[in-house]
Length: 311
Image (cartoon, rainbow, N blue to C red; front, side):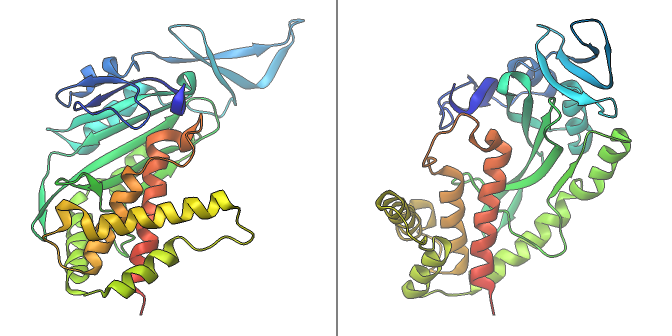
């Protein structure tokens, strides 16, 4: 199955790039989102025993309660964070008015994700910007608990994350130790969206004042997609395609026509490409789906931001 999606839902009429999942017209609350996403099951830890009855000390099996599927073998230090707890954490973190845009299960339940919309709205440089929270969890012992703030420019639905110096946007922790205490610490990283959005607004204003020539734009795009040593013809073709897609977004995107030829327009073009372009290869476990696509997109946006702000 593409993207290794087991179950999921998404809001809106347009399906994700992999074409999977159940569409709903409105973003639901956590209770209905849990059911729509197919995440209303528990992880149960069970002892391990060899075929001849010898206990395997120091390890447990994480088993899905509704079908007894073994999700992974973990050490007995591993602390389970249930799907219901992930939604409860997000509800508590974001407060009244939070709604869920998408959620689901990957790799037969071994990984899960949530994308929640914060109730706040911001107007930055004339654009409406909405902050979202993406939460990623694993039940197989191979990944951390992760959460990240991702502001969305509503008019074209592209992310506006920038590597800002004083406002954090992501948090992660392993499934060991005091999980509840660690998740409480996440509040101090992610809760104060106003802090992040205020600095984002200041940075965008600076980018809007920075004019770019077409020559600079071409140079920045070349720097984003440098030539690979001993590149194959297919790799060169892919590079050309990616460069042309960013150029097309910068010069021709309808939602950017009101924006001058500035660094802010360039960041938007890169962001739109990073979050909407179809992957060159549709792999079975495509980068942990939503969270990793967000992280990969952020890395490209950060690189673009570093290019245009370099002294």
